[in-house]
Image (tube, rainbow, N blue to C red):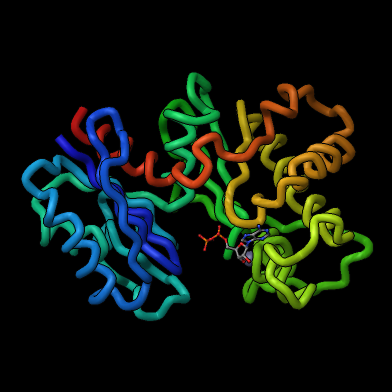
Length: 288
Ligand code: ADP
Ligand code: ZN
């Protein structure tokens, strides 16, 4: 028996097949162009495994409709990616394969992967953020995603600008929200080079860490989770976590006693596989 995973990102779709132990047995990426093109690639990929495929888990860029009783459940809704606006993602999969489909956000899927097989294993609650092209967040409590009228949009929490940072923020909605100040494109806009090309000793990284630490501070005080995980391209800066821990300690002022920071604010144990493993786990859970 096989499970399918679709990590639907703004630049690429990563499709994977997992076995019953969630070992990844096949994986392929397709560029995110139009729904017609990209979904044709996706469907062709899964067709090869159709005979053994039991269910599919999807973690998608958003915003998406996650309410099972909504007429537009399974749709990508008001995304700035025009071709994907009001696209019936789950409907397209169901039309191609008569299989159960699990549907959530890309960051929720990554949170789920870490909850079951990464730093959240054996813990009650996990919060996962990605600091990449955008900033997204997902939270899990006792195996359930935290959600209400919609999924969380934690990446758009407001942050206090650093005293030496005069950047107005890159978010078209809020300016200086976390995504507007700390996502990869904000780094690039400020410094005129991509984050991966900024040297490790550049003074800007202290400001970046200050924003990520504010996120950890807000998360700690709102949810008191067992672990906070930061993934995404920007966290590939190996020096970042030490800086985040330092700023977090300064901000929190020992107001609450958190778990030891080395185990509390961490990068993903599953490295770049968190969302894929999470989608496979969601697919497997559908059969329970
Ligand atoms: P996505 O968010 O599109 O899924 P990533 O998480 O890889 O993809 O994020 C891409 C963003 O992260 C880009 O803005 C890129 O410049 C930035 N980035 C990638 N690698 C690094 C790095 N080593 N250091 C800092 N920024 C990086
Ligand atoms: Zn914003």
